[in-house]
Length: 113
Length: 113
Image 1 (cartoon, rainbow over the protein chains, first blue to last red):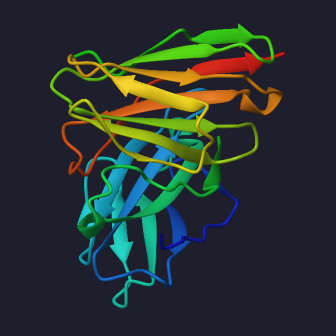
Image 2: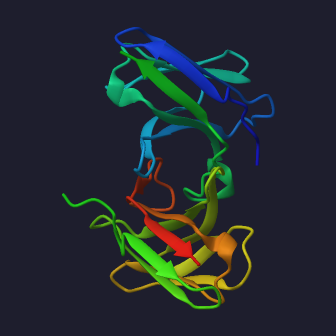
Protein backbone atom coordinates (compact mmCIF):
# COMPACT_ATOMS: atom_id res chain seq x y z
CA UNK A 1 0.00 0.00 0.00
CA UNK A 2 1.21 3.45 -0.87
CA UNK A 3 2.28 5.40 2.20
CA UNK A 4 1.57 8.91 3.36
CA UNK A 5 3.72 11.26 5.43
CA UNK A 6 2.21 13.88 7.72
CA UNK A 7 3.64 16.17 10.40
CA UNK A 8 3.11 14.75 13.87
CA UNK A 9 1.48 17.89 15.22
CA UNK A 10 0.31 21.36 14.27
CA UNK A 11 -1.19 24.33 16.08
CA UNK A 12 -3.67 26.90 14.91
CA UNK A 13 -5.42 29.88 16.42
CA UNK A 14 -9.16 29.73 16.65
CA UNK A 15 -11.03 31.19 13.65
CA UNK A 16 -7.93 31.15 11.47
CA UNK A 17 -7.44 28.88 8.44
CA UNK A 18 -5.48 25.67 8.88
CA UNK A 19 -3.52 23.91 6.15
CA UNK A 20 -2.70 20.28 6.95
CA UNK A 21 -0.14 18.83 4.52
CA UNK A 22 0.25 15.25 3.35
CA UNK A 23 2.97 13.78 1.16
CA UNK A 24 2.27 10.68 -0.91
CA UNK A 25 5.08 10.49 -3.43
CA UNK A 26 4.37 6.82 -4.33
CA UNK A 27 0.71 7.39 -5.14
CA UNK A 28 -0.64 5.37 -8.06
CA UNK A 29 -3.05 6.56 -10.70
CA UNK A 30 -5.95 4.69 -9.11
CA UNK A 31 -5.38 5.83 -5.53
CA UNK A 32 -8.01 8.09 -4.02
CA UNK A 33 -6.89 10.48 -1.28
CA UNK A 34 -9.08 10.28 1.82
CA UNK A 35 -9.02 12.35 4.98
CA UNK A 36 -10.50 11.21 8.26
CA UNK A 37 -10.26 12.80 11.67
CA UNK A 38 -10.51 11.38 15.15
CA UNK A 39 -11.76 13.59 17.94
CA UNK A 40 -10.72 12.69 21.49
CA UNK A 41 -12.45 9.57 22.78
CA UNK A 42 -14.33 9.02 19.52
CA UNK A 43 -14.04 6.86 16.44
CA UNK A 44 -12.70 8.42 13.24
CA UNK A 45 -15.06 10.37 11.03
CA UNK A 46 -14.92 11.01 7.31
CA UNK A 47 -13.84 14.48 6.25
CA UNK A 48 -13.30 14.52 2.50
CA UNK A 49 -11.81 12.60 -0.41
CA UNK A 50 -10.61 13.29 -3.95
CA UNK A 51 -8.75 11.87 -6.93
CA UNK A 52 -7.30 14.66 -9.05
CA UNK A 53 -9.35 17.82 -8.77
CA UNK A 54 -9.69 20.03 -5.72
CA UNK A 55 -12.76 19.23 -3.64
CA UNK A 56 -14.93 21.24 -1.29
CA UNK A 57 -17.58 20.19 1.18
CA UNK A 58 -19.20 21.67 4.25
CA UNK A 59 -16.36 20.53 6.49
CA UNK A 60 -13.24 21.32 4.53
CA UNK A 61 -11.45 21.71 1.20
CA UNK A 62 -8.93 19.34 -0.32
CA UNK A 63 -6.22 20.77 -2.54
CA UNK A 64 -4.38 18.16 -4.62
CA UNK A 65 -1.06 18.94 -6.28
CA UNK A 66 -0.94 18.65 -10.05
CA UNK A 67 1.46 15.67 -9.85
CA UNK A 68 -0.70 14.18 -7.05
CA UNK A 69 2.37 13.58 -4.91
CA UNK A 70 1.00 15.79 -2.16
CA UNK A 71 -2.26 17.21 -0.91
CA UNK A 72 -3.47 19.70 1.66
CA UNK A 73 -6.55 19.60 3.82
CA UNK A 74 -7.84 23.11 4.43
CA UNK A 75 -10.04 24.03 7.36
CA UNK A 76 -11.22 27.53 6.53
CA UNK A 77 -11.91 28.69 10.07
CA UNK A 78 -10.62 26.49 12.85
CA UNK A 79 -12.86 26.02 15.84
CA UNK A 80 -12.10 24.34 19.14
CA UNK A 81 -14.17 21.39 17.94
CA UNK A 82 -11.67 20.84 15.13
CA UNK A 83 -8.98 19.76 17.59
CA UNK A 84 -8.36 16.17 16.53
CA UNK A 85 -5.95 13.78 14.87
CA UNK A 86 -6.21 14.10 11.09
CA UNK A 87 -5.37 11.09 8.94
CA UNK A 88 -4.44 11.25 5.26
CA UNK A 89 -5.04 7.87 3.63
CA UNK A 90 -4.69 6.43 0.14
CA UNK A 91 -7.21 3.91 -1.12
CA UNK A 92 -6.79 1.96 -4.35
CA UNK A 93 -10.25 1.37 -5.72
CA UNK A 94 -8.99 -1.05 -8.35
CA UNK A 95 -7.77 -3.56 -5.78
CA UNK A 96 -11.32 -4.01 -4.44
CA UNK A 97 -10.01 -3.65 -0.94
CA UNK A 98 -13.15 -2.11 0.46
CA UNK A 99 -12.68 0.40 3.18
CA UNK A 100 -9.76 -1.27 4.88
CA UNK A 101 -7.91 1.95 5.21
CA UNK A 102 -4.32 1.89 6.34
CA UNK A 103 -4.07 4.69 8.83
CA UNK A 104 -0.72 6.25 9.64
CA UNK A 105 -0.05 8.19 12.83
CA UNK A 106 -1.76 11.31 11.50
CA UNK A 107 -1.38 14.97 12.50
CA UNK A 108 -2.54 16.05 15.92
CA UNK A 109 -4.13 19.48 15.53
CA UNK A 110 -4.30 21.79 18.53
CA UNK A 111 -6.60 24.81 18.27
CA UNK A 112 -5.67 27.70 20.53
CA UNK A 113 -8.53 29.87 21.80
CA UNK B 1 -30.75 7.34 11.99
CA UNK B 2 -28.75 5.32 14.49
CA UNK B 3 -25.01 5.18 13.92
CA UNK B 4 -22.67 2.25 14.35
CA UNK B 5 -23.10 0.84 17.83
CA UNK B 6 -20.58 -1.25 19.71
CA UNK B 7 -20.89 -3.20 22.92
CA UNK B 8 -19.68 -3.35 25.53
CA UNK B 9 -18.12 0.07 25.94
CA UNK B 10 -15.49 -1.27 28.29
CA UNK B 11 -14.31 -4.83 28.89
CA UNK B 12 -11.80 -6.11 31.40
CA UNK B 13 -10.41 -9.60 30.98
CA UNK B 14 -7.65 -11.70 32.44
CA UNK B 15 -4.73 -12.90 30.39
CA UNK B 16 -5.60 -16.21 28.69
CA UNK B 17 -9.34 -15.56 28.63
CA UNK B 18 -11.50 -14.93 25.58
CA UNK B 19 -13.17 -11.65 24.68
CA UNK B 20 -16.20 -11.11 22.46
CA UNK B 21 -16.92 -7.68 21.04
CA UNK B 22 -20.08 -6.81 19.15
CA UNK B 23 -20.93 -4.34 16.42
CA UNK B 24 -24.21 -3.27 14.87
CA UNK B 25 -23.74 -1.44 11.57
CA UNK B 26 -25.89 1.35 10.28
CA UNK B 27 -29.14 -0.02 8.89
CA UNK B 28 -28.67 -1.03 5.26
CA UNK B 29 -24.88 -1.29 5.45
CA UNK B 30 -23.51 -4.67 4.43
CA UNK B 31 -19.80 -4.12 5.05
CA UNK B 32 -18.27 -4.19 8.52
CA UNK B 33 -14.64 -3.48 9.38
CA UNK B 34 -12.72 -4.01 12.59
CA UNK B 35 -9.69 -1.99 13.66
CA UNK B 36 -7.40 -2.08 16.66
CA UNK B 37 -6.02 1.11 18.15
CA UNK B 38 -3.41 0.39 20.78
CA UNK B 39 -2.09 3.19 22.96
CA UNK B 40 0.42 5.28 21.08
CA UNK B 41 -0.20 3.48 17.82
CA UNK B 42 -2.38 4.27 14.86
CA UNK B 43 -5.40 2.31 13.77
CA UNK B 44 -4.50 -1.16 12.54
CA UNK B 45 -6.85 -2.96 10.16
CA UNK B 46 -8.07 -6.27 11.57
CA UNK B 47 -10.93 -7.75 9.54
CA UNK B 48 -13.40 -6.91 6.78
CA UNK B 49 -16.76 -8.66 6.41
CA UNK B 50 -19.17 -8.14 3.57
CA UNK B 51 -22.42 -9.96 2.90
CA UNK B 52 -21.67 -12.46 5.63
CA UNK B 53 -18.23 -13.44 4.41
CA UNK B 54 -14.73 -12.54 5.54
CA UNK B 55 -13.21 -10.59 2.65
CA UNK B 56 -9.82 -9.76 4.06
CA UNK B 57 -7.83 -9.67 7.26
CA UNK B 58 -4.90 -7.67 8.47
CA UNK B 59 -1.61 -8.87 9.89
CA UNK B 60 -2.97 -10.36 13.12
CA UNK B 61 -2.64 -13.89 14.53
CA UNK B 62 -5.47 -16.43 14.06
CA UNK B 63 -6.64 -15.98 17.63
CA UNK B 64 -8.31 -12.84 16.32
CA UNK B 65 -11.41 -14.00 14.51
CA UNK B 66 -14.95 -12.94 13.90
CA UNK B 67 -18.10 -13.40 11.96
CA UNK B 68 -20.92 -11.49 10.37
CA UNK B 69 -24.51 -12.50 10.95
CA UNK B 70 -27.39 -12.49 8.43
CA UNK B 71 -28.54 -9.13 9.82
CA UNK B 72 -25.00 -7.81 9.06
CA UNK B 73 -24.08 -7.32 12.69
CA UNK B 74 -20.67 -8.66 13.59
CA UNK B 75 -18.66 -10.18 16.41
CA UNK B 76 -14.94 -9.97 17.01
CA UNK B 77 -13.47 -12.75 19.12
CA UNK B 78 -10.05 -12.63 20.66
CA UNK B 79 -8.85 -15.90 22.15
CA UNK B 80 -5.98 -16.52 24.58
CA UNK B 81 -5.80 -12.86 25.51
CA UNK B 82 -2.40 -11.30 25.95
CA UNK B 83 -1.55 -8.08 27.77
CA UNK B 84 -0.67 -6.38 24.48
CA UNK B 85 -4.23 -6.97 23.23
CA UNK B 86 -5.29 -4.10 25.47
CA UNK B 87 -6.56 -1.48 23.05
CA UNK B 88 -9.54 0.37 21.67
CA UNK B 89 -11.34 -1.82 19.14
CA UNK B 90 -13.25 0.14 16.54
CA UNK B 91 -15.93 -1.10 14.22
CA UNK B 92 -16.90 0.69 11.02
CA UNK B 93 -19.58 0.08 8.45
CA UNK B 94 -20.23 1.19 4.90
CA UNK B 95 -23.12 0.62 2.50
CA UNK B 96 -20.98 -1.68 0.35
CA UNK B 97 -17.33 -2.62 0.04
CA UNK B 98 -17.06 -0.03 -2.70
CA UNK B 99 -18.38 2.87 -0.68
CA UNK B 100 -16.06 5.80 -0.31
CA UNK B 101 -17.04 6.59 3.25
CA UNK B 102 -16.86 4.44 6.35
CA UNK B 103 -18.77 5.24 9.53
CA UNK B 104 -17.09 4.38 12.81
CA UNK B 105 -18.53 3.46 16.16
CA UNK B 106 -17.25 4.74 19.49
CA UNK B 107 -15.25 1.61 20.14
CA UNK B 108 -14.83 -0.99 22.86
CA UNK B 109 -12.00 -0.41 25.30
CA UNK B 110 -10.50 -3.83 26.09
CA UNK B 111 -8.18 -4.07 29.05
CA UNK B 112 -6.27 -7.29 29.68
CA UNK B 113 -4.85 -7.69 33.19
